[in-house]
Image 1 (tube, each protein chain N blue to C red):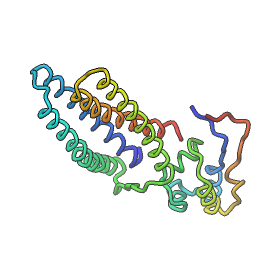
Image 2 (image 1 turned 90 degrees about the vertical axis):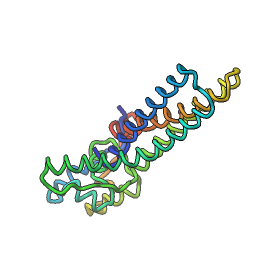
Image 3 (image 1 turned 180 degrees about the vertical axis):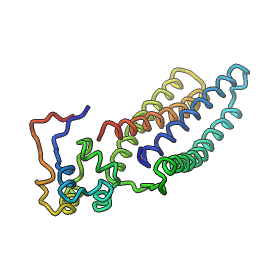
Image 4 (image 1 turned 45 degrees about the vertical axis):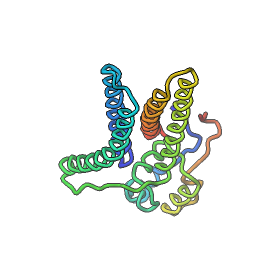
Length: 150
Length: 75
């Protein structure tokens, strides 16, 4: 698995966990009757900060971990190929395209709920939800392209 | 699985270049080893610039490294 594939796998796992956390917190809020603007804004802030901080830490830990495993297996100093060549850029571009496409559908569906009379809070909650889902779909697309070929 | 119209002889040329490793070729042309592997397996068709750099690394004309097969289906 290449440096880029490890990054994408780490991102995929982290965003899946964040999505899980987001859904669990929303269901908890709905059940306890505290699904209001203050709590939702707090949750969005948490999700955004988690997305940034955990991705950075997770990626670093993934590379340290895989470097240690490689060093143990080969008994040599691990070589990290952290350059992004034309194939990586092409895959990244296609993955981004998939992310934007999924995100656009998400925005459309979110606005549709608003148009059908749901409160704006529901729309914004769905926007964050579809943003996370789009990121995960984009990561899956990138991993598939690395495996299947471009 | 996608089928590619561009075939290559990179593996054979590496063999004739004193068993040049994939890493050595990757360093010469400025890409990762994974890209060389993908090219050899026919999972990636390189850009024109990279194709020329690969040919230059082997010291052969472009058409000795890559060939185009119009019969192969592509998607």
